Length: 277
Image (cartoon, rainbow, N blue to C red; front, side, top):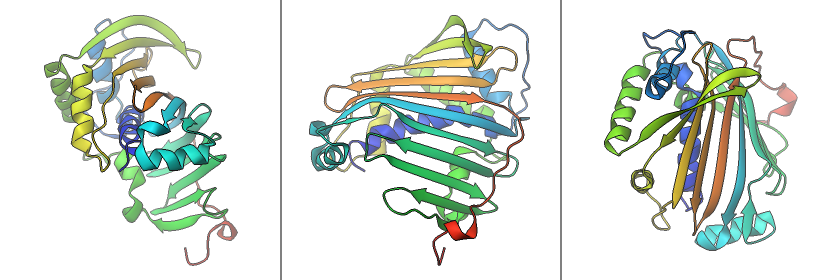
């Protein structure tokens, strides 16, 4: 994995962890009672969502990646993006997830990288993926091989409560602190706004554990803001900012809406699937 892939993969993993914390089961249930403890807000948002069946997600990325800090990979990406710095502004990911049916449909766009776009559908045990730079048709594969949905939407056998408790213990030991800032509007609804400070040394330790072919990757600063709907205690939004003098800066925003609203996810028409798929 190159230097670009490692930090972006880590940031994406964090964003998706917030986005799909709803997909596990637990003994908790949502409550509309006012909450003032930021730690309780965070744990309740993860543990009280066993009833969630569908959710809509929107992810936006902004910032820039310095090609000079990425070695040979930076030269390739910089060339594709039209310069030594790859701009992330305008990058979006949108989609719907049907947890009960183990299905999803996600579309991504990165205008600054040769107008790159991608479309991914997982339904009925198969994954269909289409990437604009490679083909105008979908490739088809068994979901067990691609394993996208299971990785971001854990099955009911995963104990989210224990996972959250374990993660919280690690963050507490590292000196993490959650602070309730106040209440903001997300999708027209009130949402608790919590900031989470995590020592950058801990983050770099986790990045180092991921490994890198081209050398160690480290961040100079990072921050996390987290919003939770006050009426349901479901996750509403997470914003992750990270910067590195060598690599650049990234701002990732994940917004979750339309909980438990009907969604229809179907396979693409046969004429849009590559032959042999």
